[in-house]
Length: 403
Image 1 (cartoon, rainbow, N blue to C red):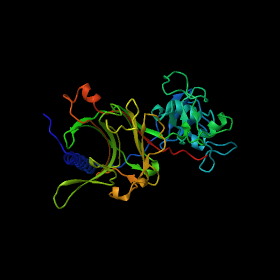
Image 2: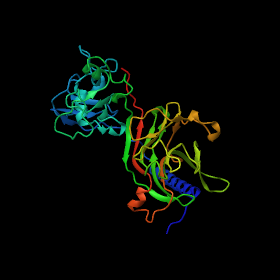
Image 3: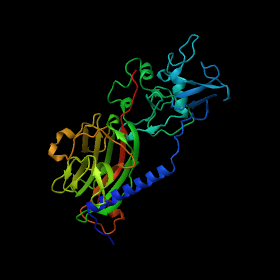
């Protein structure tokens, strides 16, 4: 038996759950507080006859006996790391804070080759429109997976026993390409791709009823803290039944503070910022696409595909993207916070940061709507009558070093 729940009721329930979790976490933290553990280097790993590891600060190093060159010896008490960010440049001096080179800036250097094979976290960037496998060096440069240091493998290339010889953006890329480009000087180049932090394919949601008893399928995700300097971007690709079908998909980013109202003792939800106001009531930083028989949406292609995205630029300016199809990278934004009249906002058109602590949570919500309940909400018929989530992509700006 289904009961109809209003937006107010599910907001109260959601906030109560948030407060309960926050209170439990605070109690656990206070009862089991312990001093933070200092970061430690990783264990030595053998590759191509030599040993390598990541230092406590994330920098890459080989095992050395004299502090000037990598050794073929096995790890011992006398062994010391030769760090890639503190390589001696030559002469009689040893590596030190005022006499440094960086092996990651050199083409086909062991710093990049060994790291690419041992510690690099390779990801497919196909969801962002780049048919490549990318990773980042400890220095912060982007690199693609390659077997010859010149040609990137496609995202779907299967793993092989052949050693990886990465193509690294910046000075190594410029040397490989004959001094024409670093990759960073082309805004559409894969070297300038944002960092992919999350990719969920067809995430699962839960049904509930809106205030007029229409079905809503909600996907809810708790987010970490973010800052506008990282330019976080949330991208949603959906499949609607079609441009002429009654359906809707909505992407919302929420910053929720939970506290006790001293006058009533009730737990309330205080949004840090409220933006668009639509026919469903107040929505936090929201973007939606809709198909309707009498008002076909041109932000949905003939196959029912649409892309929604929200990005917070450095400084806090919010950009909204909405277009037909699933093509990435993102094109020009449809609108920004400055494009709306201030009367539509309850507070500000900027959102510079959103922390996470015992009294504050960040949430992402995806809602898909239909105009009536199917006979059984768990059948395939139910799914086909509603917009379906194809995937969710979350990115942030890369911190690439200056050459």
